[in-house]
Length: 149
Image 1: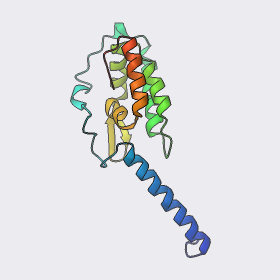
Image 2: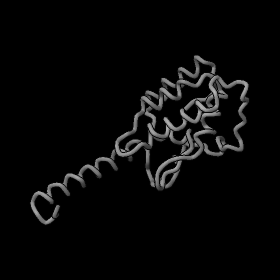
Image 3: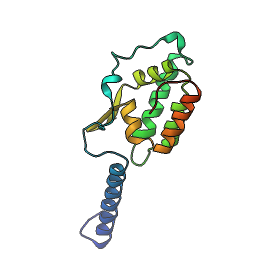
């Protein structure tokens, strides 16, 4: 397609508008600068070396945490417009103990896209809608899980 035709100019305009809307959406969702972690994230408290998991307290087999972590990644980073807050909240709600949450954080590690790499708490803080975060925290409270997002 040639962009010097009227049809080509219209297509180009539509693509530019869609890209601009997507960038504004991401900015509104909490990404304030590319490549920097959110200010309220606490990566020092969640590094793999500092998280101690009592595997006897896990309510899921270890392989399930890999699946959960991959699903969480896909819910947030799965591509253009694929952010699925409800799916992320559902995955977080599957945790039954503090050690489940710790294992999920460890398994998730640090993931993301070019210029934006977050651990799981940073990802949740940046992308999960506040209403869903409150709902997950309520579920954690009911399950006597100490983690809060």
